[in-house]
Length: 96
Image (tube, rainbow, N blue to C red; front, side, top):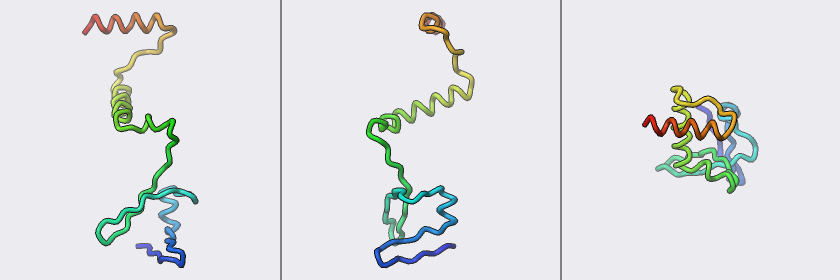
Protein backbone atom coordinates (compact mmCIF):
# COMPACT_ATOMS: atom_id res chain seq x y z
CA UNK A 1 0.00 0.00 0.00
CA UNK A 2 1.48 3.38 -0.98
CA UNK A 3 2.37 5.82 1.79
CA UNK A 4 3.05 9.54 1.86
CA UNK A 5 4.30 12.00 4.47
CA UNK A 6 3.14 15.43 5.55
CA UNK A 7 5.55 18.06 4.20
CA UNK A 8 6.74 21.35 5.69
CA UNK A 9 3.77 23.26 4.29
CA UNK A 10 1.17 20.64 5.28
CA UNK A 11 1.28 19.18 1.78
CA UNK A 12 0.74 15.51 1.03
CA UNK A 13 2.00 13.92 -2.19
CA UNK A 14 -0.42 11.53 -3.90
CA UNK A 15 1.43 8.50 -5.28
CA UNK A 16 1.80 8.52 -9.08
CA UNK A 17 -0.04 5.21 -9.42
CA UNK A 18 -3.17 6.77 -7.86
CA UNK A 19 -2.78 9.98 -9.87
CA UNK A 20 -2.79 7.97 -13.10
CA UNK A 21 -5.57 5.59 -12.03
CA UNK A 22 -7.84 8.48 -11.04
CA UNK A 23 -6.74 10.71 -13.95
CA UNK A 24 -5.83 13.53 -11.59
CA UNK A 25 -4.26 16.73 -12.90
CA UNK A 26 -2.21 19.47 -11.20
CA UNK A 27 -4.67 22.06 -9.88
CA UNK A 28 -7.50 19.55 -9.30
CA UNK A 29 -9.72 20.36 -6.35
CA UNK A 30 -10.52 17.99 -3.48
CA UNK A 31 -13.08 17.90 -0.72
CA UNK A 32 -11.27 16.92 2.47
CA UNK A 33 -13.31 14.97 4.97
CA UNK A 34 -12.49 13.54 8.36
CA UNK A 35 -13.98 10.10 9.02
CA UNK A 36 -12.93 9.08 12.52
CA UNK A 37 -9.13 8.92 12.47
CA UNK A 38 -9.03 8.83 8.63
CA UNK A 39 -8.62 11.70 6.18
CA UNK A 40 -10.59 11.21 2.95
CA UNK A 41 -9.80 13.18 -0.22
CA UNK A 42 -12.65 13.35 -2.73
CA UNK A 43 -11.79 14.74 -6.20
CA UNK A 44 -14.26 17.48 -7.20
CA UNK A 45 -14.97 19.38 -10.38
CA UNK A 46 -16.01 23.02 -10.46
CA UNK A 47 -19.18 23.55 -12.48
CA UNK A 48 -19.85 27.00 -13.95
CA UNK A 49 -22.98 28.54 -12.39
CA UNK A 50 -24.76 28.70 -15.76
CA UNK A 51 -24.41 24.90 -16.10
CA UNK A 52 -25.42 23.94 -12.56
CA UNK A 53 -29.03 23.17 -13.59
CA UNK A 54 -27.79 20.16 -15.55
CA UNK A 55 -26.21 18.63 -12.46
CA UNK A 56 -29.24 19.02 -10.18
CA UNK A 57 -30.63 15.81 -8.71
CA UNK A 58 -33.92 16.22 -10.59
CA UNK A 59 -32.25 16.78 -13.96
CA UNK A 60 -29.90 13.81 -13.50
CA UNK A 61 -32.87 11.57 -12.64
CA UNK A 62 -34.53 12.62 -15.91
CA UNK A 63 -31.26 12.02 -17.80
CA UNK A 64 -31.13 8.50 -16.37
CA UNK A 65 -34.77 7.92 -17.35
CA UNK A 66 -34.06 9.13 -20.90
CA UNK A 67 -31.00 6.87 -21.16
CA UNK A 68 -33.14 3.89 -20.10
CA UNK A 69 -35.80 4.80 -22.69
CA UNK A 70 -33.17 5.04 -25.43
CA UNK A 71 -31.56 1.75 -24.39
CA UNK A 72 -34.90 -0.08 -24.46
CA UNK A 73 -35.97 1.45 -27.79
CA UNK A 74 -38.72 3.71 -26.44
CA UNK A 75 -37.87 6.55 -28.81
CA UNK A 76 -39.26 8.03 -32.00
CA UNK A 77 -37.51 8.55 -35.29
CA UNK A 78 -36.33 12.09 -36.02
CA UNK A 79 -38.97 14.47 -37.38
CA UNK A 80 -38.35 16.59 -40.45
CA UNK A 81 -40.44 19.46 -39.12
CA UNK A 82 -42.57 20.56 -36.19
CA UNK A 83 -45.82 19.60 -37.91
CA UNK A 84 -44.72 15.96 -38.06
CA UNK A 85 -43.82 16.10 -34.37
CA UNK A 86 -47.21 17.54 -33.39
CA UNK A 87 -49.02 14.93 -35.51
CA UNK A 88 -47.01 12.18 -33.79
CA UNK A 89 -47.74 13.57 -30.31
CA UNK A 90 -51.47 13.80 -31.02
CA UNK A 91 -51.46 10.22 -32.27
CA UNK A 92 -49.66 9.10 -29.09
CA UNK A 93 -52.19 10.98 -26.94
CA UNK A 94 -55.13 9.32 -28.73
CA UNK A 95 -53.58 5.87 -28.24
CA UNK A 96 -53.30 6.40 -24.48
